[in-house]
Amino acid sequence: MTKDPVMDAFYPAARAATSEDEFKKIMKDMNERVARQHYAISLLRPLEYALCQPWLKGYHGQIHSVWMGTGGPSRLSLYGARFWIDHDLKKSLGKE
Image (cartoon, rainbow, N blue to C red; front, side, top):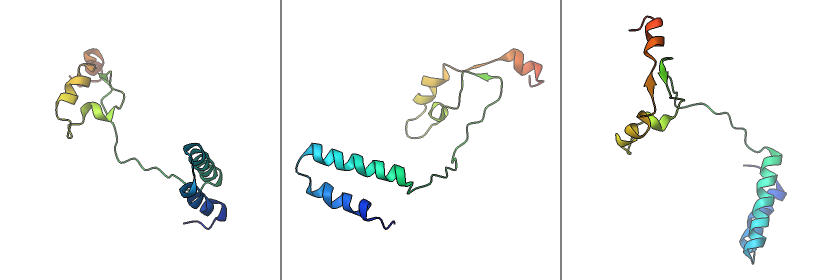
């Protein structure tokens, strides 16, 4: 959705490339053009949050560590063995 003749010329040039090296150079130049012209501004909005209690240790926000999606519960056991509860901290916070 830009009107850039330099950018528009990359696609036909890539299609007309006669060697892999020529194609790679065109693609490299095209990617550099995109990066330098800042055609897209990424305004990331997180779709997921990783929150945990302060007494849960060993967990650093790895979303797949507790996700039960199509991978099933086996994923939980893979990562869950690396988490532990700091009972002293939990008790000092009045949560036990």
